[in-house]
Length: 144
Image (cartoon, rainbow, N blue to C red):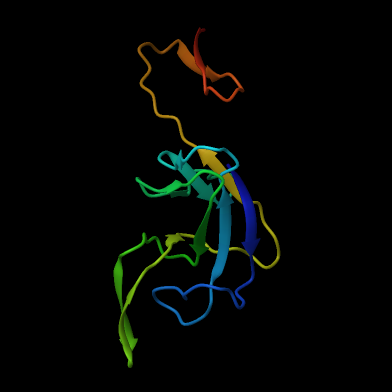
């Protein structure tokens, strides 16, 4: 899975605006490069290298085989189907159709990070885990 495309700063884009604003927001596109569907459970996006786990992609999100997923980067943490008040006529409420990340993209440039979190419980203070870089996501236990 890769970050395939993004749009910053806010400009015209081919999907609905954010739940709060009428400005067309920043967005990014994830691409599943595999021939099987990919679950995004445990994946995170961030615009801050010191906080790679800034926005967790909501549980249940997935990308079909060789498919794409657009995430709106407008500063509003929301998932598809959530309802927000718009506060003006003729649209009293707005129902989200996309995932919305809790950050926006800088027109001046920044690092955009896609990472996968790993949760584990140590059994002793001298135990740690190391990731083996392969497609099987193997983990090996190291004793210090």
